[in-house]
Each structure stands twice: as C-alpha cells, then as structure tokens.
Amino acid sequence: MLLLVLNETKESKRRIEMTTKNRYTKTKLNKFKNIILNEMDAVTKDMGDIKEGIIETGESNTSYTPDSIYSVHMADAGTDSHEREKSFQLMARENSYYKKLEEALDRIADGSFGICLDCTEEPKNLCVTCPLIPEERLIEVPIATRCVECKEKGKLGML
Picture 1 (tube, rainbow, N blue to C red):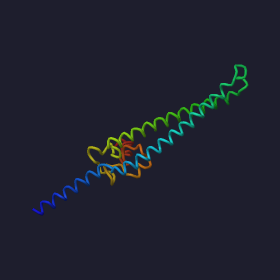
Picture 2: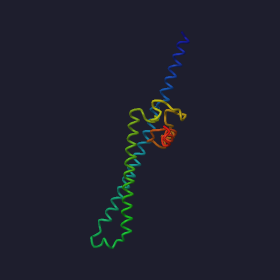
Picture 3: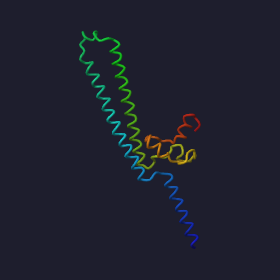
Picture 4: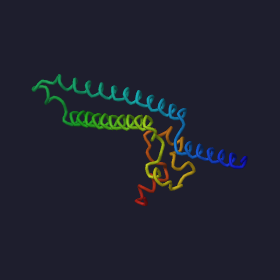
C-alpha cells in the first residue's frame, strides 16, 4: 500500500513537471508582460517622434508659394520627399511591431505565450527547453513565436 502511494506521488510530480515544462509560470509570464508593456511604451514614443518629424517636414513645404517653388533646388525637394517616404515606412514598421506586441499580450492572456508554434503538438526536441522558447530569446525578442532552431530550419525550408 505504501509503495502504491509512493508511485502516485512520483506520477503526480512527473505531471507537475510536465505542466511546468510545457508552460511558463505566472511569475515569468508577468515578467514578460512587463517587458512587452515597456516595449509598447517605447514604440509609442518612437511613433510620436516620427509623426512629429513628418508634420514638421510637411509644414516647411506648405510655406512655398507657386512662384517660390522654383527657387527650391529639385535635388533638395527630392531629398525632402525621400525623407518623408522613409518616415512613413518607419511609422508602418513601428505600427506592425506594436500589433505583434499586442498579439504577444493576447498569447500571455490565453496561456500560449512562449510555446514554439512548430513544437506545440509534437515536440521536436531541437533545443533544451522544447517545446518552450528559451527565456533569453523571449526577453530579447518578446514577439517570438518559434525557438531559434525551428526559426532557422523554417528559413531553410527544412520544417
């Protein structure tokens, strides 16, 4: 009888280990959430700075009258146009990154954050933490949905 209880205890410990190995703890998820929220604040600030730059560039061009437009060198006008276009592209990139950060927060809420998409159903054991994405990667790239190994194999068309 005692042996049976001991086996049940080992089995329950194994189930607990499996559960914690397949998901990050609430403490770690809160840590990731704070990292993501800080990143979202930084992106919001960056987008505000880019927006101000676009507005300032646009305001300087609106002061031209039809007669004075010819006094501006065409190369300068081309440079201004290029800078505005670059700012719009940066704004679009930041906006896309912000949306991915929001998706990461959604994954934290539903409990799927930090689990490699390629290893969810069948762990491939390509990394030590499989099926979890290593914590170091999530700290550096909080929008990551795949471990480095799966990401590299995916780029090479091996998955």
